[in-house]
Length: 214
Image (cartoon, rainbow, N blue to C red; front, top):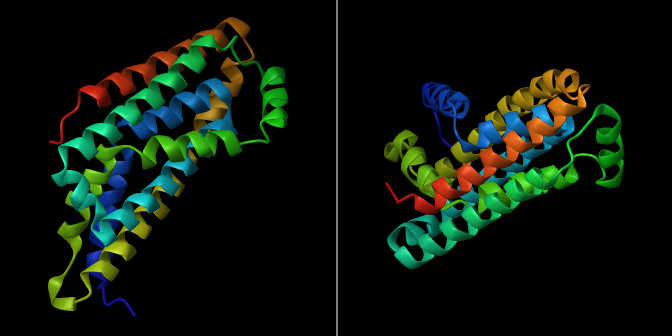
């Protein structure tokens, strides 16, 4: 059994929720996809990001993240891969003719609902070394060495972080999709929403490509 206190977990969840709600690449992506492509796209991408958090938790628990942090080559390779993927998502959005309510239902049937968006969110989060370094820096602040088994505490806290991410990103995707549904009833607005989403993803990709470890 993992020995943690209520105060330890409560403090961690409060900090995690504030960080998740603060404007950042993941929640801005969830918001923009919810507006432009609908609830299932926003929720799916958000769930994918949350699943990516499980990967970073595992890497932090096993000490792999520390190795990435110590290797400039590994960090740069992951960073450029993540940047390229975000730019690719942006390019796809820019090429889209724009979603309408009827077109969205057709796209969702072809793509088997939210599955493709979930995979995109997972990949975008899982290969982002900045997220890996965040977990490496954030989780240890809530580890109590006196309670032993730091790896088990890290795994638990990382799992809790991913769980609250599911709730918050899911809510953002749901309500963004509600607003987007009204907007997509106007074809011209739908096209501009896709353009804005594309610009956002490309901007995030460029930002990641230029980012350092700090």
